[in-house]
Image (cartoon, rainbow, N blue to C red; front, side):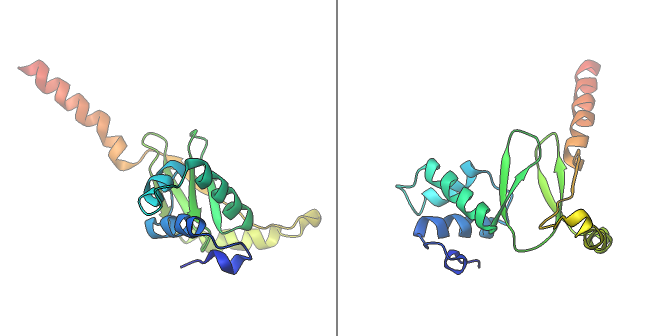
Length: 150
């Protein structure tokens, strides 16, 4: 469990509850989803407080903000390096570890320091259509054909 106090921040109950909620869920939560989870234990919590604390936690590097260009921002803890499969239809996100990671880390090491640039972080996301969403049009077409056959 990540602790806010280890990051030289004032350890408020709300901030720690936000971090705990993200960690318990495994990440990929929107601010609104985090708000709903934490509000159960902290009824006086406001959505604005969640957003402010997420900005603080992201600024400290404890929480990673994930923007996949879908008008929704997700949050996860930054405890490990991993990659994402992102469905552009349902906005589902799945963490993925693959052999590519070793090769990519080697590339990051080679790029670090080029022209004086210091790499602090990197991200690799694969955007496409998940299996469930791929099957939806096929199911709908089958249902329409069945209705027309009656």
